[in-house]
Image (cartoon, rainbow, N blue to C red; front, side, top):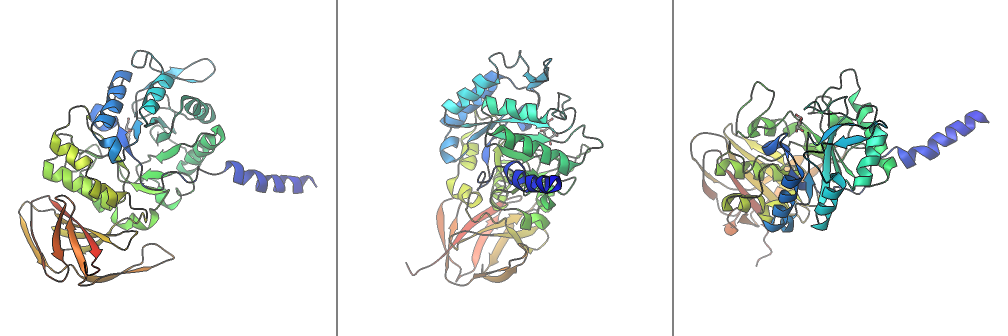
Length: 402
Ligand code: GLA
């Protein structure tokens, strides 16, 4: 009888506690995160200004919603073990900041770590998962990025599962963003745990570089997404890391390519630049609605690398209404002249157990999403000069004879 009760309680309790919040992040989350531009230099004034800028720059209207403080907001624990925000940088407290962000119609995110310390050696959540989750819920947190430094000897799956359970128990729907850099292949086990997971080490604001620090340029990260596409979808996204658009290491052409590629990858779009004084050209990239629509497409299918000619790649993303997004990427240092028909039939077998057939015949219209222009149909050759490190981004729509 006792055994029966135990077994019954496992079956009854499991579905209540052992799950993530479903229904969140049905399209890739969009927002801003402090790390790429500000590192540890975070304070409440900066975060408020960033929320203001998100609203006034047009980013909020374009779909950005989460304002996320990354590492270095936390300083210690009180005698009861509750996490304490740095009182010098956040004198009004995190709840007041969260209220301010919510008052702008935006959502609020925080950062912690599954190990004893965060990567910047602030207190991590190990051993305090339930307490921290309760604190976040009481502060009105909507998004948690959960890192993996100082986690020696821990199982990644168990640690992330524990924080998932703690968040669920705290009762506030919080998007859960795993950041263990792809080290434990989170795409294989993360779907029931988190809403997104980093697939690589940290991004650098360079197009093609691999630094000693294990950080990577946009191209290196792109290459690592190819085999992961089948694991991504609504509510569970591959995260190739936050954006470097508007940071200094990328030219405008490269920033545009980076943004367009991340949209083709159905990547979370977390801006990582200073939103307060953005050049017009950067605002144009970050708020290009036709490009964002590719990222936010409800089908949520990460793009396929359809053709690889070495320095020239063609990426293909099927969209919910039967359209296709196509990205033509020039990785070389020279301009490339493209002159081919964009027609194809291809089989997509990455989303097991299903497979799909994509067919682009001569009856599609072609639209240039950077320049908002119609460029003929697939009946004719598509001709374009592609700048070095440039990405042409097109939307192909079935031509109904209009
Ligand atoms: C790790 C993460 C980064 C950032 C820093 C903060 O490196 O991958 O995205 O959160 O920690 O210390």
